[in-house]
Image (cartoon, rainbow, N blue to C red; front, side):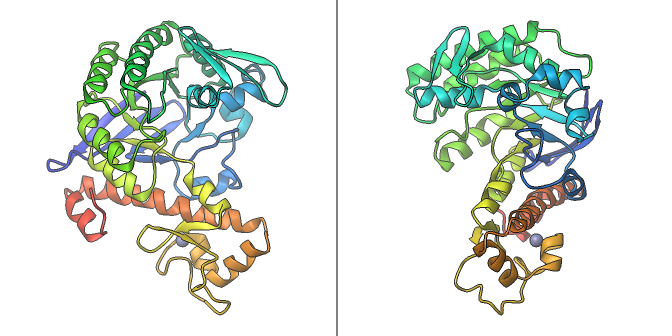
Length: 369
Ligand SMILES: [Zn+2]
């Protein structure tokens, strides 16, 4: 993997770069659609390609439980199995197993997390070495370190422990030899405690991995706390390596992240919103397709002027009708608009960075950074 930094905005620190992987080139900053089980919910790969996505994210936990990494490896790895030929990133599985622990359904020790699979009833253990071996079999281009991700309201003591564990586990992750095309990203922890974040940052940078992520910034913290962490710490991540902000990706969060020097984002919101009949409206605020002002004769598209295939073809009234009648196609159409909004916003910001007009672009587009 090769990361080339093309331009940095001297006022904000926003960056534009190119990330070359074995399965394709990614122009950064980039928004990554989430393909939890090896598919983006309700949106076929052809559409994901047409929307301009350059990399997708698969969830290690889900793929490990079903169909299992050994099976996926036996049929040629994630790309071959799922049919997405471009780059993949897999998370470590940590986020899911720690959320089990928060609900009292898993046990955390220095070795990792032990939990029960609700469906089959089997007991599983995932620690740093297990996570690396699973991700090695899955074969994604970018694999994430197994980190200890405490909840947003964890005590200082708990967060301190999570930072030390994350460091220990990062070292164990680095000991596992991955496939030649794979690259490990380490995840900075420390919650809302500035000194702990700084310590985590220093510890992980000393390990010199191919990329870094800011973790633990969307597990219950307030928006202000997340902004503060991103603005304060992104700039200290290694300059010539890709920087990833995990699980964050509303239009507003993308603006804050990109203007703070983050290169990669992922978020489940585009498809989750559509399942609730919601979409990114004219001012990038979330709007419900069922709202009263969308009357039966409303011929307007979701967002006037939007170039997505949904807005070019359908009226608000028609989409509202589909949603109220539970017609499955509506989830697809709304997802297309939501992905288009985030992917095109990211691409427009990239262009503005390359053309030395990023702060001006944000002001004109009414984006606060
Ligand atoms: Zn649209």
